[in-house]
Image 1 (spheres, rainbow, N blue to C red):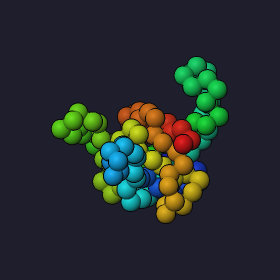
Image 2: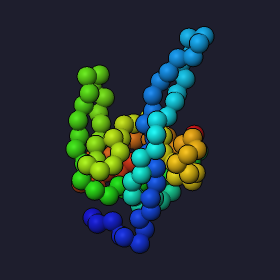
Image 3: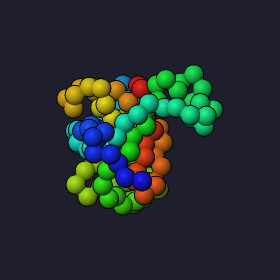
Length: 124
């Protein structure tokens, strides 16, 4: 299935990293923004309604354009790496409604590696 060019927009991906503060508490920090083009639509359908229930209104689906490779790091975390774009991992942040200089407003909750990579993101 091809992505319709008129529906493509540019969004930004921000890599998640866990850091510790001076008191030893762990917090989430996000790296620099990387742009990518994707088709975006709200969560819907019977399956997503069963999976997310009342949270369905906070779910967004994305279909990313371009070839990607699947790799795993030393901790067996799966990475979806685009040639000229982001390195996507579940839990990373997405800037869908905000600019790339602001904290992400969505978090990747599921990655579906079909021919065209699909993401499910939830509002933070």
